[in-house]
Image (tube, rainbow, N blue to C red):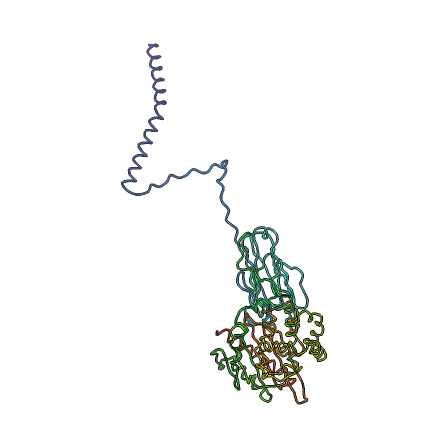
Amino acid sequence: MVKRVSKCIILAALMVVLTAALCPVAAFAAEEVSSTTAAAAVSVADEPVAPEPSEPADPSTPAAPTTPAAPAAPVITCKTTQVGQSGWKAVKAPAKAGRTTGSNAVTALRLSVKSSVSGSVVYRVYLAGKGWTDLVRDGATAGLKKSSAPVQALRIKLTGKLAQQYAIYYRANVVGYGWTGWGKNGESVGARKLASVRGYQVKVVKKGSAAPGSRDNRYFSAGQSSAEYFYAQGGKTRPQLIKAIAKAKGSGLKVFGTSYSLNSSAGKKLQKAIKALSRYKLSFVMMDLTTGAGISYNPGKVQYSASTIKGPYVAAVNKYRPSSAASAYGTMSSTIKVSSNEGYASLRSRFGHSPMLKMMAYCGISSAEMNGNRNYTYLSSRTLAKLWIGTYWYYYRETNSRSAKVRGLHAHPLNSFIDRALTTPTRTKPGWFPGGGYNVQNDAGVVLVDGHPYVLSVMSSACGQYGKLAALVQAIDGVHADMVKKG
């Protein structure tokens, strides 16, 4: 009996072991059948199978690395105040700040930067008559809110990690010339001691990226590389301009070289300015040196030149006698700047009339139009304008070693109502003589505006009437701007 029981116990134990050994195989087989059936069901029904719920992540297992989002590009805000504007006007770069036309100069600016990268925007400006301001940063004011000290140049740069990852480019829109090339990371941009900045543009790019545009002609200060020299290039040739200005003829107010209508708003303002001078003898010629188009009023009327003749004569001396002219620079300066009669007489005595006679031929002027053998002469506003075509051409186009230095003498000469009327750069020489049978107030020269420089000569008997003559010049300038705009 005992043996039989023992046998049963041993047999039961063996059954347990066999069952345990066979269970994993059975389970695997059942799982395989289940998966095959599920796959077949998806194929037949064409419906997705809901995924099994995932098990919670093991906190001891490190998470897979993620790629961080690229930081947003820095945003530069430009705040600007300028002549004729109350308060500050803000734009976000790369929008243009300030203006691109007119003559209202920037007087101060504030720049600020918003970025996920640490660093600042640092800047300074060059103020007319005062020089470079101290460096300021992040929204501080650079400049003065005074029209008497306009901004003429600027420098901008980034600091910190911003400077390591980005470059800042900027350019200026200069009164009378237009856009400069692009400066970069603290370089000077503008026209120091030459003209005012009326607008500017800032762009931030990743370091190593190309400049937004040309970097040529980004900064001017003096000499042949000056802004006035660069922007005076282009347009018609000298013979073409002399031929074009011959079309200025007849009496009264007329247009030549274009179909512009004087019934425009600008034309009516000019007619009003002429009417204000109706009690005086008046003649003028204005011609765009790029297109040859212009306006005239009694252009053939002959009047006494007074000291306006000194400008073209000094140009002639430097053009035709450059080596010996250098030693007479001081005399020429007083002759142009303060209209010294003694200085002019000295120049005529030393260099004679030959330079003027050669300049007349250069300008297509015959002896019937004016007497070049006289220190002071009689001529028309059209002839005076022709003299300034030649003077302009020598100063800016067919230059020599004396051109740049001498043309600078014509900036802001005494009693120039053309210069007084305009904030645009001018190169002029006035002449006046009260009483004595002459009684004249004349002015002539070149106005360097917006890539469209123009010659202007005004001759009148309105001696001492600076306000009315300045208003006339402003009206002429308005017509010129309108003509350029309308093509």
